[in-house]
Length: 416
Image (cartoon, rainbow, N blue to C red; front, side, top):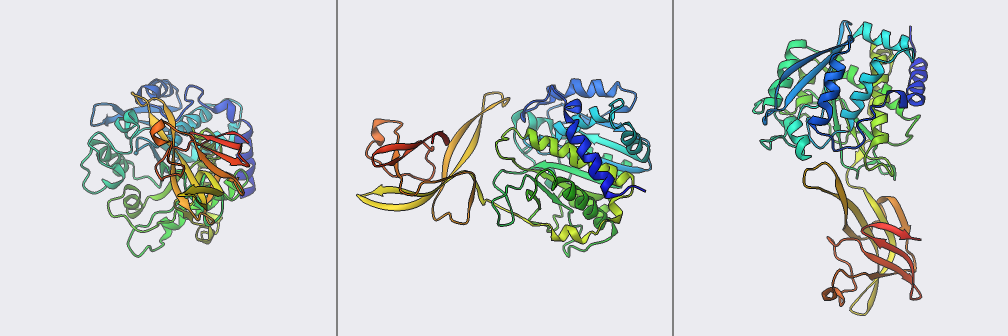
């Protein structure tokens, strides 16, 4: 019988050989239906996969199912029910390439496919992906439409779930980049949740199995991103949420939220972590490793902490107002401004907080002790305003004895 040590070895091989499996045509987060449709067609022609059109989105884009494997354990994985959360979508195409690999990890692939039947819905909300927005074309949040089923996309997923009655469900999302793991400076690069199935948050066998699969993934990921894996801070029951209702139905449901990794704004490193974590879980489920893990480890995982992280945090800067000096911290975030067709973006920085930010953190931090803020001006009309306001773009110099020590241009450190 396989052990967790076997899973660790497997995960290490996935990491070392990842470039063999990475779908090279997907290079950035803003992927659209037209980007994945040829890949779905190509994958569907492979003898390992069965391709089915499940239906259409509100605006008429096809939603597909790809099935692989013939095992008794049924696992449903769906991605991008929120259109602007595509990290795991890319990872699914990496997984398709892995399952179709030749000699690399051949025994592991055969073991998974013989024990599990895999059902993939790679992009549930293609209309949202087109506009790179969370909601669908009706502005419905599909993850809050599990009971009314007002949207085509929600009905498609619910119908598929009811037909196959999966043993496990992987609900794949992205989260904002500002979560930390507990009260540490570590970003919550990966966050997990075994959703509740009632308001009392009871733990039955099915929810326990969800927790055990998360314990396995957490153990694996700690080897790659130590201290950067968290348990989602809110675990209350959502009566209209898709994952909570699947858990209620008996499907062992696992929520995965992909956060940010330092210097990885396109989340390509996090894509790789999804690839490793999901496949490790599938191997663990396939070979009955998960069920031997202590589910209580799940409750010992640190919770994520909302809005404790900035892209750039400047500490102890001196600002001058009305001839007086004040020492403040400056929290700066990077907002993504989409281009016309939402296929790319530019960064627009914003000062989002000023004051005592002692218990906050930054992906980048500057100790500006002894340095004075000198604004750079967008227009002559602003020349009289030396101080900063929340909402300003982050354009200023940090000076000492009248000399520029550090320049901040649109939130980027120009020189130091």
